[in-house]
Amino acid sequence: MKKIIVRLLMALSLCIHSVTAEEITTLESTVIGSQEQPKVLYIIPWKQANSLQRLDSVLPQTFSAVFQHQEYSEFRREIILQETQQNQSE
Picture 1 (spheres, helix red, strand yellow):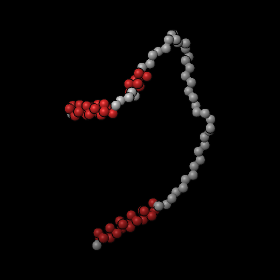
Picture 2 (cartoon, rainbow, N blue to C red):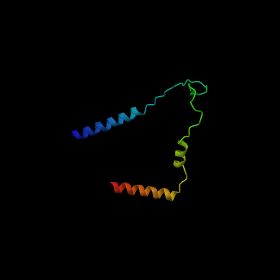
Picture 3 (cartoon, rainbow, N blue to C red):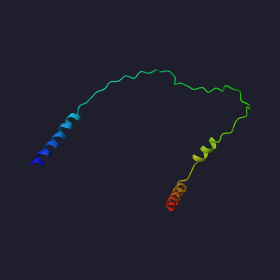
Picture 4 (cartoon, rainbow, N blue to C red):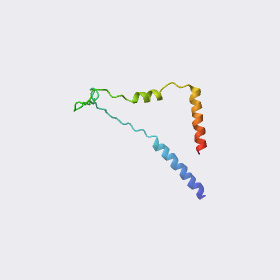
């Protein structure tokens, strides 16, 4: 008998909780901002450079190697090779 009462109370508490969960709360907000241009950072050297020769950058070479075209079959072959190497090392 006690088990039935406990189960009924649990079911009743779940029903009451679902009724209170259906309340709708409406929030109002206002966003205030400016339509000005975004802030810009200017980096100006404060000293004259010793040499005006341009330094070569390694960045474009790195990007070209990463984003170059690769055939799907070659890509799948590399993935399978890496997976087999990982399985062998474990």
